[in-house]
Amino acid sequence: MLIRKGTDIKSSDITDEPCYLRRREFIQLATGAMIGALAAGTAEAQTPLPNIAKHTVTTDEKVNSFQEITSYNNYYEFGIGKNDPQRYAGKLTTSPWTVKIDGACAKPADYHLEDLIKPFELEERIYRHRCVEAWSMVIPWVGIPLASVVKRAEPTSKATFVEFTTVLRPKEMPGLASGGLNWPYTEGLRMDEAMHPLTLLAVGLYGNTLMNQNGAPIRLVIPWKYGFKGAKSIVRIRFVEKMPRTSWVEQNPDWYGFYSNVNPNVSPVRWDQSREKRLPGLFATRKTLMFNGYADQVQSMYAGMDLKRYY
Amino acid sequence: MRRISKVLLFVLALSPVAWLAWGLLHGTLGANPAETIQLQTGRWALKFLLVTLAVTPVRRVTGWNVVIQYRRMLGLFAFFYASLHFTSYIVLDQFFDWNAMFRDIPKRPFILMGTLAFLLLTPLAITSTKGWIRRLGRRWQTLHRLIYLAACCAIVHFAWKVKVIVGDPVIYAVILAALLGFRAIWFLRKRNARPRRAVPQSA
Image (tube, rainbow over all chains, first blue to last red):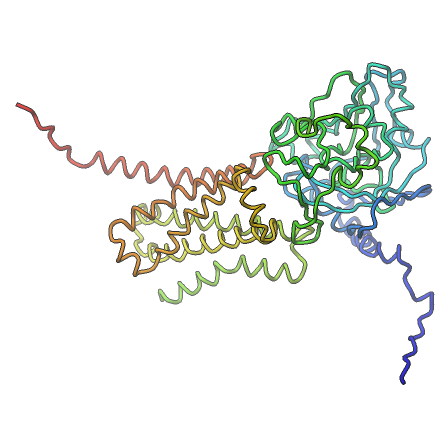
C-alpha cells in the first residue's frame, strides 16, 4: 500500500489566514501607493488603525473582498454609477474633520474627529450588509458604538430621534451637480435604535481607516436596516424631538420608509425584498432574513408595531 | 459589397454580448456581474430600438435609400438584446421561480412595462421574414407600427427602474421623442399637402 507523505512545508512558508484574506488589500494598497506617487494628492491612502480592542463576528459567512467593498458603492454625491464613488471620491478632503453634535442635549460640541473617537475603544464588527436594491455583502467594519457618543452628549428627555447629516461640498463631490436628491444627505434613527449595541459609528474597514467611497472618515452602520440608512461622511449629529425628514423618504415615500428595517415580507413598489443576491454571486436566490438575521437582538424594539405600515 | 457590409454590421452588433461573455469568464464585470449583464443587455436593446427607429428619418432626410436594407437586422438585434435582458430577469433575478414572477410582474410597474415592451416586440420579430411580409400584405406595416409603443414602454421601464431620473434615461427619452416627433411632423405635412376634397354640398 502506498501511503503518501505530505510535502514538507515549513510553517514560515505558510501565509497565515488573516494575512492571506487580506492579500487583495495588500495589492490594493501597493497599487494605491503607486498611483498616489504618480498622481500625488488624488489617491487617498488608508492608515492602519492600531489598538482594535474587540472583534465581533456576527456571521460565519465569507467576508467580501476589499476590492468588492470599495468598488461597488452607492454614494450619490459622487455619481449614480456603482463605480463612480471609487472613481471620484478621492477628491474629498477628510482631514481635518469636525463633527457637530447639537440639538436636545446637555453637552453640544464641535468635535475634531480624533477627539470624538479617542475616549472609546475601537472594535471590529463583521456584519452582513443588505442593500435595498436586493444585494448583500459581508463587511469587516471598525468603529465605536454610536451609543457611547450619544451618552457623552447627554441627550435630554426631548431627544426622541437622532438626525445625521452628510458633508456637502459641491467642489469635491461631482455628483451634486446632476441633482436627484435633496442634499445634504440626511438620515435618522429613533433614540432606542441609536442606543442599540449593534449600531456602529464606523471609521475603518479591514483594519484600516475607511476609503472615501465607503463614507470616510466616519459613517453609520445599522446592520438590521437597509444600507442607505447608514449615513456616510457625517458632519452633524443632532438630537431632535420629531421624526427627522430623511433624503430617500423625501425622494420617494412609496419606495422608502423611515424605519427601513430589512424585512422579507414587506416589499414596497420597486424591489422584491424576499430574496437577495450575495455579491459577487450571479443569482438572487438567497432568502432574506428578518432584520437581516439580527432579529434576536433587535425585534423587541418593534414589538407591537405594524411593520407593514411602518416599513 | 452589400453582403460584406451586412456581415460587418452583424459582427459589430454582436460585440456587446461577446464583451459580456468574455467579462463573465474573466471576472471583469465588477462586484455585481449579474447586474452588469442586466444593465448592458437592456441598454443595447434600447440602443438598437432607437437606431432601428432612426432608419426611416435618416432615409427621408438624406435620401439614402440603401439604409432600409439594414433595418430588419437592426430590429432583430433589438429583439435579441431584449430577449437576453428578459432571460436575465428569469434566470438571474428569479431563477425560474415562475410563481414568484407572476406575482412580481403585475406588482412592480417597471417590470410590467418592460415585459409589455418585450411582448410587443415578439410578434414583430416573428413576422420579420419574407414569407410573413408577403402573407400579411398591407397589414404588415400596420402591425409593425407596434414598435412605437414598444419603444415607449421600454423608455418608461428604464425611467421607472432608476432611483433618481437623471442622465441616461433622460437622454434616451429625448432621442425617442425626436424620432417619433419627426414621424408626427412628416405625417401632418403629408396630410396637409394633399389637395383637400371638396365638401359635398347637400342641395
